[in-house]
Length: 125
Image (tube, rainbow, N blue to C red):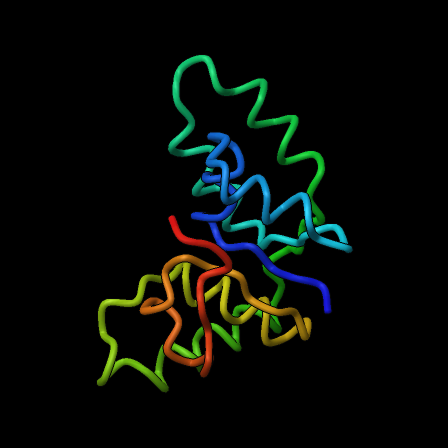
């Protein structure tokens, strides 16, 4: 199954975290990301990292936030708002992207995604 990386995974790979790089190297398919992840990554890019960031981002498959994803994100947010009110819009969009496109969500922030049972980080941060 194709994977959808959340922002934390992209950042770890970008920064050369050994466990993240090893995990990424072992993938059989090109990872996907929601366009909201691009926003989060570019917002936090450090001085001198822009070129390497753009190179990494160019290797990923990007999925736009369309009406179907937006509606699903809203539905997910309503479903968890009482039990998990702190989940941000970006994480809801990432979760919705995985759901709508049938992708396996890969994250280090398991608590941000209670709508996925059995979710576990792919490596130790």
